[in-house]
Amino acid sequence: MGYLSLAIVYGGIMLYQRPTIKAKWYNYLLLAFVDVEANFLVVKAYQYTSMTSVMLLDCWAIPCVLVLTWVFLKTKYRLMKISGVVICIVGVVMVVFSDVHAGDRAGGSNPVKGDLLVLAGTTLSAACNVSEEFLVNNTDMIEVLAFLGIFGTIVTAVQISILERGVLKATHWSTETILLYLGLALALFLFYSLVAVLIQTNGATMFNLSLLTSDMWAVLIRTFGYHEKVDWLYFLAFATTAIGLIIYSMKEKDEEEQRKFLDEEDGESLRSSLIVAST
Image 1 (cartoon, rainbow, N blue to C red):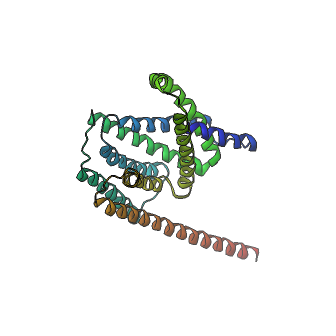
Image 2: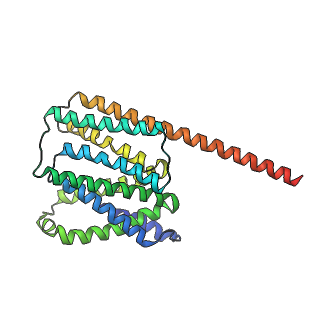
Image 3: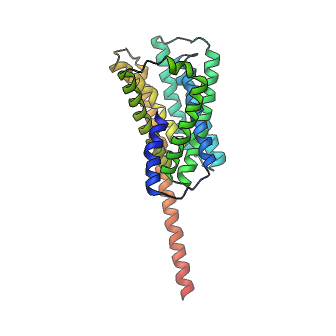
């Protein structure tokens, strides 16, 4: 439903604007395939391992993104950025310990299999985020989202017909169920749209660091929505992760100002050279 909403909205915009396609179609097919499988593997992992394990292991996406952006996008990470990443991860680890201390010790039916699924899913997710960063910065954001929606819908439909046919038949399509699916589609549409903006402006690394806070918002929902007790360590973890994000963002702004300063210097040098040549 999420991919279908992307295809309808952004595909419709592309049909209206009729722009020139800037990337090969098979690049978007590969992007959509990796994104679908990443989501599938992580969701599947909840059947075999505990939520605590998933929360901890999804941090694996961050070092994957760091390596992939460094190797393929030539992104340079200085000490301040790396410090922000480490602080964010420490905050999430504290959230996990908070759950363990509060009694969330459910191991799942097959923890090893579940943990491996999480690691595989987060690795694919990191590759997808880095690929999306490259595409949104070198093509067009609407084009990326439209083709992600189109090919994502196709891949999902094929996979459901093969692997989840029985579940689909067993689903009772009541009004409540349909409304829940529509709400999920809207949430996923907004999520993917905002992700594209964040990745384009701040990069895949910043996105994955920001995504760490989703575990903490889940705890907030459990507290105020379901009236569950939260360990005191959670609040310290929230503050720690927020500080890590601020440190990483501050460094991003400093580098942007430095780049602007260097661009201005290059512009002045070019103007000086032109004046000298004209005289």
